[in-house]
Length: 198
Image (cartoon, rainbow, N blue to C red; front, side, top):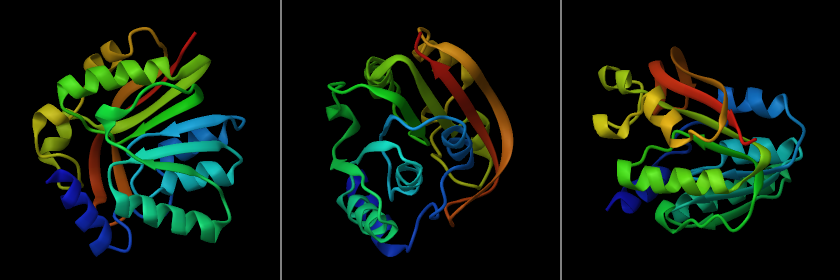
């Protein structure tokens, strides 16, 4: 049901979250030398394509076949290469390691989230970075996007606890103005985090 919902949404809109990368993600990429990066639940590939254009080796996945097709079409137009798989979050296994894993608006139920976040931690090389931006629980009162289920929204203590073995370089909630396509637009309350595996 959920997978079909997203396939339909990606099919019915030219872009869901725009073609430009997430600003928080873009700023991180611009400040670090390229390496291997993993982008789970990557949707239409705006962040993957940007990272690849900056010389990163990009692995990405999403459960939507439509999202994968649109990403690879745009990547070909941009003349960049991305390894993009169709896969559910629950099926992800940490068989490769990365300098960076970026979780950009990856909202999950608690039981799935905790297991997946442990796998993300295992996927980082020593010295590797986790980059996360997601809607905080305060987003429930806004109309700029995100889940309408409070249990799927995040707060800093919970996410920092999920990644308690990372050295937190920054972790905080803030209010921003989103301009990411028609489904992420307006005042938003978000959680932004950068952690490093020591």
